Length: 220
Image (cartoon, rainbow, N blue to C red; front, side):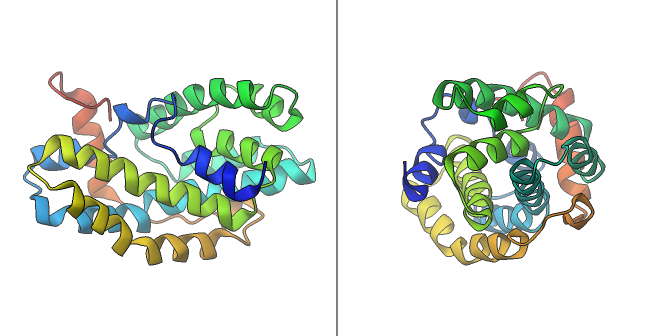
């Protein structure tokens, strides 16, 4: 399978990996008053914060898998840069769903087996195992993480707000240069200490609030 086709497969929103249950904190933001015209700013803020952490984690994990280096320090670095417990739990839940798929796609992969042996691996590590097995380049993995996040928020926005689907598609298109910027930034990372550590306190607060509510459309 070519690198391009594997990227297309893993970026497909129709994959059975629970992506439809996610809003990337958008539901909590809308409940707090975020308007439709502010969604692109919200998407950009995620690219600058949460996505940089996830993409950096995935790329460092990819390097260590290919180099035969241990992964626990990557897990620790990711957790330290994801202070919200609900956001960590969400990533691990999505990681479990993605791992089921990756095991089916690559049943003989040693990289997948190594990540599966970890306790509740987060989604970036599972993506790294798929990338290591399928031959994805680090920059391609970074693009995948960032693009998937944009599409997750865009899809959720259509269910939460009165929007034209053409608008959300245009927002994603307009932010593709930011996706490329994230991919370029993380592509050369090889050490857990190099994973970006941006602060996103409002996203953390929304995640905490959403985890406590009993009336919600999305799990996170």
